[in-house]
Image (cartoon, rainbow, N blue to C red; front, side):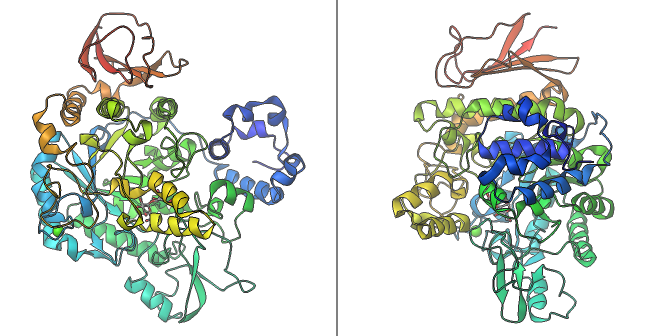
Length: 627
Ligand code: TEU
Ligand code: CA
């Protein structure tokens, strides 16, 4: 049990504390080793307030909140190692953002018929499963992550018949469908919320989180991820409702068993349709341990106050276990869990826990102390460090998800190096890191042609609510339009949401009609062009996906780092006892010395046509090691 007399050093034996301390160090941008400093380790928690002084005015509160959080797993027994085999561990999953993939009826908006048209292309690429971002009826305040009806298809995307046809066509090709379940919140136009707001005594009265204003202000100081307070008033009820995202995304009250019944029914509905799996949107936020104010110190460090009360709530495991037992069964589940650490993720996904199959961890997406809106060059040594942890000890207990792009982040190639010269070389480096990884691989549409950030000109071209609110918030905080625009341009999610570039035609073969958002550099990179080029990024993905399918060692094999202490190179072996592979990667823009290796090796893939002395900039090679 953690108490105020516990020393910092002892905290590292507590899984939650270990995760939280490394997250806080990551956000604060201070060197991780600070926790290992003997003086810091010998400090009792009770001494920190004095020690922190003005740096942490609410230190006493933070200490108590952390002790409560750390003791959540006080009686949790250690996990056993596992090496089970499942289809979803071997699968290459392709994420589709339906609004931007393929327009099937010429209205400039992607749709289900368009996706069906492109299934053979995905089969050809070697895709085993598709994760489909939300397709449900929605007023699209957050592009479908605000669901109005979980049992209806957004009319712009098509009909329920189209969805059933998509499932049939995918299963006919041996492909599986993973749909996006957004149940931390609904749309404020969902019938549950409309009734909850209108009838405070009605059957849906307690489906959402309503609280009375406090001292003329909001019920607490929590922030929304889309800027501003996380609380909103309605006229028909003398209370405010919680919305961690936009005002049109009220949070569901998971403490209410009827809400959990509703969610199980929705899962049953789609499983009966033949859906094979679920991606669970911000699923770690569903249990709010308390609605007390958030710590100002943590709020300014983590940019969103109150998060310590809901990013790993005390009933989270209970709720997930209940969903597994009552509804998911053997359907595949991947949770989006922003803010949770490796120890928490093991407890959320280890087979013996019967909760989720895997989660998306986001620690690798930004360098130490950086956020998505900071303008900096992504250093690949950070990817090496985070993936080495995930594919090493972590994977012995829980199966990781491996990705670098999705619909919420700019393009990775551009974050690493904006210069054209190395674009395709870097895109292929990323392909090798993903497709030789120990984990389930998730690719994002466009990544397979080496998509880069879009040269948006001004705010009129932006569509994402987060970017638009961010711009207004920065202006409101006194930034100049240039400064606000620059921040949005650096970190906007819209970079990932422009139409898929199939050809160099006017609207990139995505549509005959002007799309809902502008097109990117389709003359420079598109599928049609790259299918014809042997050395294209697309052909590299096809080759590497096939290599992964043909050699289980690249999936289930052990992960053995080589010369790990050396910066700027990422080298490792994958070995399943039958076959052994060696991967060597130059993580930087200058030539580096090639780490020495032993034994005969045959080169099976390189992102360079010819090998020189040492490793050329971003050079990436895969060898089969003679046993
Ligand atoms: O995103 C949740 C999330 O935490 C973020 O990554 C988010 O995109 C943003 O960066 C907040 O700072 C999920 C979905 O992936 C995202 O598209 C939705 O906007 C969000 O939840 C709300 O449903
Ligand atoms: Ca359309």
